Image (cartoon, rainbow, N blue to C red; front, side):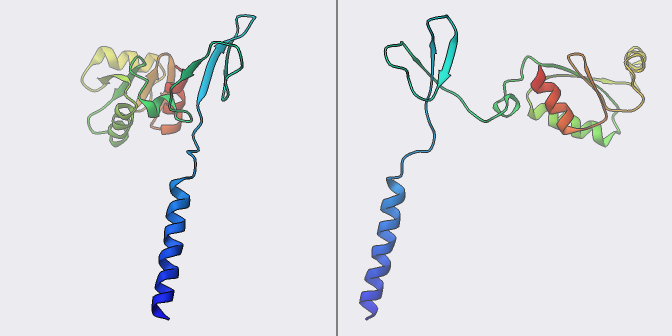
Amino acid sequence: MKTRILFLNFSLLFLVIFFFAHVPNASSQIYKWTDENGNVRFSDSPPAGVKVQKVQGDYGRSKAEKGENRNVKVIMYMTDWCPYCRKAREYLQSLKVDLVEYNVEKDRQKAAEFKTKGGTGVPLIEVEGIMIKGYNQDSIKSAVEEK
């Protein structure tokens, strides 16, 4: 009796492993081609009789998650003592942007620039012309993604 139950358990385990080992991969291939009007098209199945190119990519991931923000210029007006400035710095570094920081307590010229840009508190973050007052990850990510 015990042998039979043990045999059934192993049989069931084998079937489950066999099933999952042979389930097809859920990811699909994307194809790129140019139609007869010169328009670039993308689809998950290649059209017949047209030269196609397989497209590699991280579909569903943002530019920030893929680290494609190296050319995005970000200026952060900050102070040494500000905890939100530290959080903003860490987050911006994780997005792999080109970050420049100006301490408004140590640089009078940058403090004046900070005020002309509407700065009343730190951090003040400028993402290529988009101004973000304070630390807000969603606003920062949206501004970086826009660029």
